[in-house]
Structures are given as structure tokens and as C-alpha cells.
Image (cartoon, rainbow, N blue to C red; front, top):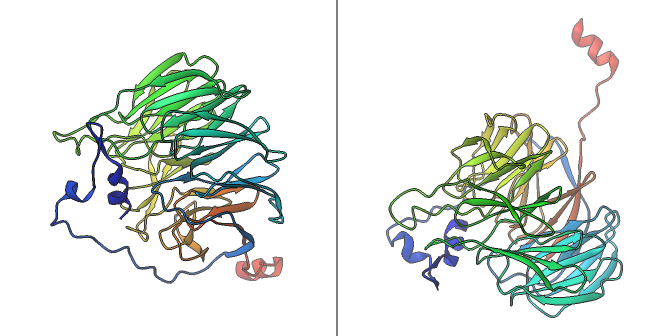
Length: 399
């Protein structure tokens, strides 16, 4: 199960613990819920697919496709970084770094950054794929890096947020938070609002800092630890955060999902929802997946629940990503599931392959880009094949 796999990376007193001993030998492993037939209201059409690289054998790599609006960029665990034409899927360039990658790509300012398993970042030119520099980040990263202005922002799993110079990779500033005795293996990807970078940490705390100087403007405790044991007190913020306007939305493990004012860190509202995957948003709604795989939609303004779906329990769905009139998730068997944003009805399903999809899908314009753990990247569109009603049909219904 995903929960057990992730807790293989628990860190206690500086030592790596195996997950099996944490839960006891008597806990029964429940099987993923079997899929049932659905009414395929929408048709999922694959436009193109490409092999980015080899299968990832490393837990929780943060290799999700990225876009700068003109190209799609993808990276593989075995060190391939590729730029694609988003319409045709044709390869623009490919760079073979011959290193194991765990995070990226992050794109901005005409450059692309990825992070290696061995703890260093690599900057490439997005026009040519040419390597610009490599820089030590002194730790493993499982969070998507960011590029803003002259800064490359990287968060490592040792609770360090740092900025490197875009020009030469030299350190600009660093923020280190204290790690709890026990933490999940992972870290959320920082977000940038204006000139402020906001990051979540294993302590359940959010920190906002100036992109250029690293000066902290506020800190806010999203998920206060609860319980007596270190396991009960896990409150990591390891999932994606969402931004709409000046509002930030974040969730913590065994904690809360909350709306936060990005200018001050004030919590506007919160709900008791534990999620490792985080939260996604459109203009009206928030979408998250509980630890058991239940998908939940909430009103963005007040956090009231709109709908929930329990058809993917224990199937390890990714974060629900808004795509047209649907939200889409991938699962542990390579399926894509599409749900109506209004009522949560399952409206389409497709399969990329037999390998799991653990990276959140990417939406660019009217297309969906999905990368599986096998290193396969595919582009999809949704087609409504339902017969169109004519004016005569409407008139007949009214008579």
C-alpha cells in the first residue's frame, strides 16, 4: 500500500526505519478496490505517446511533466530530460545526463532544472537542452524545483529550503526547519505568489519567505501534531499546494486542509481532512484525495463538501487535477479516471499501461499529459461523442 511504502522513509533520530515494524504484524493488508463498469459519457482519445526513459525503481520520485506554454518537458529516473512539441509529440531535444533523477523538471526564465538522487541540481537551457551548471544542494529532493527571477528554489527532505543563483548555481540563501523525531519520506513542492515563496515542512508548519533574500515574512502552523506516540504525531505537509489569486490551499498528513491568506499566513478556514497528496483547485472548488483513496471536492470559499467518491479506495489515486469539466486521477494499475466536477460522477476511464501512475497529471490548454512510473509519457484529449440535440428535439420535449 502507498501509505506503508511512504513510511519506509520515516526518519527517527537520524536513522531510517522500515515500515513493517511500525504497524505490527497483525494488521491485515486490504486489497485495492476492484473497478466496476461505468457509463463512458466522454471518450478519452490518446494523441501521442513517447518513452521518456526507464522505469523508476526509486520510491516517491517527483518526476512530473512541466510546461512553459510552448513545450512539454519530461525527465526520467535514469537521467533523460526531453523537450516535446505539445501538439505532435515530436522530440525537440533530448539530453542524457547519466545520473539518477528524483525531482523536476522545474521550468522558468528560459531554463529548466532537475535534481539528482545524489543531492545536486542541474540547470539546462530550454531552447537547446544544453547543460549550464551543476550545483550541490546538500540533500535529497523529492519536490518539484522552481525558477523565479534570478533564483532557483529547491526544497530537500531534510527540511531545508534554499535558493541558488540562476547564473552560476551559487547559494543565495537557505532556511532550515527543525525536523520532528519521526517524519514521512517526502516534501511538498513550494509555490510562489508574487515575490514570495511558500513552503510546507514536516513539522506541519508553513513558511513564507522573500524569493530574493530568504527573509521570512510569516510562519503558520497548519497541522498541529496530535497524540502521544511519534507515529500518532506525524503531521507532514508533503502534498501539493494550490494557489488561486492571493489565497493558498494546503493539507497535512493526519491533519487539516485549510485556506490561508498568502499575505499574512492567517488561516481563513480549515477542515479535518488528512491527505498526503495535497490539494488542487479551480476557480470554484478544491479537490483532494484522502489517505484511503477517497476523492473529495470542497467549495473553495468556505470548505463545505460538494461531493465525495469512494470507488478508488486503496487504489492509490494521484491528486485530482481539474481538466475541462472533469477532474482526473491516475492509479496504481495505470488507469486514468475522470469525474464530473459538479457531482463527482465517473464519466470516463482509460489506461496508459500496466505500470502505476504516481505523478500528478499536467494540463496545458485542452490537453492532458500523463507520465507513468515506467517512463511512458502520453497526451490525451476528451471528446464528447453524445448525439447533439436539435431545436426540433427541444420543441418536441416541450410539447
